Image 1: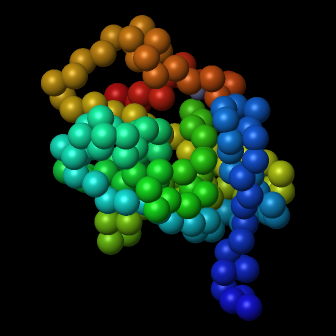
Image 2 (image 1 turned 60 degrees about the vertical axis):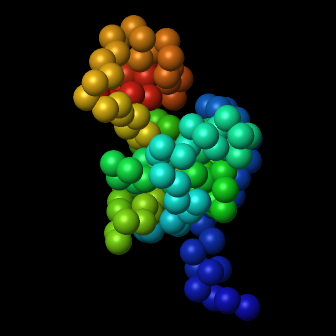
Length: 153
Ligand SMILES: [Zn+2]
């Protein structure tokens, strides 16, 4: 029995009222807790489109890592990939040694859904109007300050 793993066993995946499956606290998660790593295969961004064409990924669980590399939670990922977006999140992503981790920004009560701000961004050449952002990347998180889109810039 691995007690460390048990101590870090904070969450479970189930159907979310927001979107698809979500991640929920199965016990109170103290503020500042590192819940888990956002695991997945490291892929160069130039390879991602080819991988999509070849059916290796659906791009649903891709997280930006840096200019050249992304992490694809669909391949070798963990429950972190099921965390939904919120414009008023209770978790945040912090990077250590080029590895993203999900941290609780506040105490999260048992049964509450975990979420973080996806902060979808585009390179400087791509300029989307606010209507395009809302149409192509809509947000339905339901929070009071919902900006209506997953895009943050
Ligand atoms: Zn929102």
